[in-house]
Image (cartoon, rainbow, N blue to C red):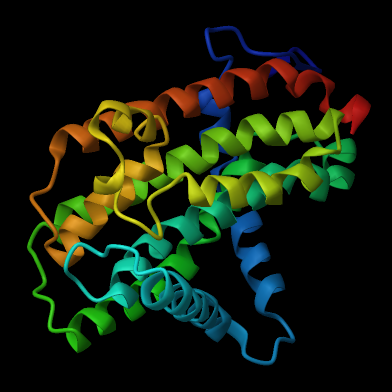
Length: 278
């Protein structure tokens, strides 16, 4: 928090449960846009295929998963073609994993700015997640194209369910990213452990298989991971694999908010030490 007292500029941590100065965040809102737009330009500057990479990566992953898990392993796809089944899961998973990775490394990446200039550090992890919304948008175009190819009927639920699923995914990746970015400042092992953690989490999330194959008595454990609910509901919305489970939607939203609040709490608790130990 920044306060002017006569001719002096006083910087001190704000008070409150989560120690968030909302007025200050609003004041620096343009900085969020600047960081996000800079990352977008840097990512695609001087690249051969440019933004087509956002389409190429999930498509190739879908092809590989379809061959090994759909054709060879015969994993259930709930009566729909396996390629579109797995892609509907990859659509949100890729956004989640990419956002989480960037958010977790955001403070280390911007350590020179943190040491020299004051601004709300909370902006860095959040801007890292916003950046990947563009990739999600292009991946969504492939999803719609596959729905047309496989003659899937577009549901009106997409108008309000899709934004909710996107919000849950953003909140989840931001919350976990805030926590990991704080830990990463002190313990640089996080950057090496994170890829392995995300890989394990992929198999604990129903991306390549339906949640229905999990026994009902332990299925509730899956929903401690909000992405399980997001992907299951996304399939119901896109592929008509069943009625939309609004209770799962509420549970995923609640769990994602818990992760987000914990991430903010830990981030603000450690923020005062960032410039000293980064």
